[in-house]
Image (cartoon, rainbow, N blue to C red; front, side):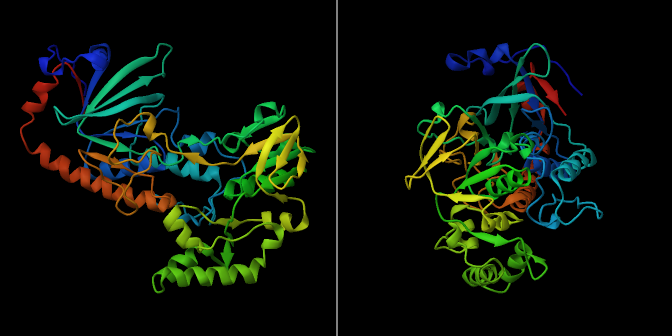
Length: 431
């Protein structure tokens, strides 16, 4: 129910950079504002629904899980078994395969939102979010592009949940001469299929799961990919002895120290995959799990790319020195004649571009405190989806965030509401 009040309290009159306050529609949110309608935001929303806490969820795109819907390639499947990717309180359908396709996962997320009655405000981009120390409230300024006339809104709330995640923006490193290359250049987030690359020589920059899988897909469409491997990388079999490698690692970590689990995984990898150094794939000094925990680097789970590398259909090359017209010069002096470049160079957080805060988040937009202590900041600020532990890590943080907000919300709603109502008579109450 929305009630528009007539009087504007003087306490909200501002000057300087905030002079546009009265030009914006002001909405008081009786609960948290959640920024982001991906899996992390949906998981928080479901927890709040279960606790009876109202909220507003803001999403810049026109759909939930826009990364999955708009920025993934067609052949993508979940890299981990579905039981490690499901969100809280809503398992995958039993008839889904162990590794659901991206379309099945999107269907699951849409069913999740419908089941918990989560209705994000789509096409609403957060311009800034700043904590007002005078009133102890967050001010979240947005621009809505859902209509022909963009409108500005300012949400006032007690709690702010940052659920935009660590993959909000594509990362595009600078390469000397790339502007002179002349061929087709795109980031992997815009890649859909190798169909349009048939017969082409394609340079894939990056050797993570995306780089490996894009290279494999190009091979399957009769392209000739060369994959840039600048540094060491852990490549593991997706399954060991008929079980998911990840599931096996999780089971062993219940009984064995991390370093020992790493040793066992590497032993099995050597037995199954063999020595990969002769193909240009050197392993890091740290084990795969230790590297993931300390630096957030995810090991590659092989789904067929290694076979193509062994056969020479995927060529592994070292780092790039510079580009020129139709060519790429490598750090070893080799010159490749190429037609297209696909940058599988990863993603990064966009939090620094809109959140006006520097205590909880680092300069690169990741919480300074590591998992499992990176979900709660000060003054009602929370973060979900920044654990570098995938969907399972996001789900754990979402449960903690929803519970903590619900506890505070229930305590505060016990008090008289007249004080809050008086402060925001001009605002629209959102229940």
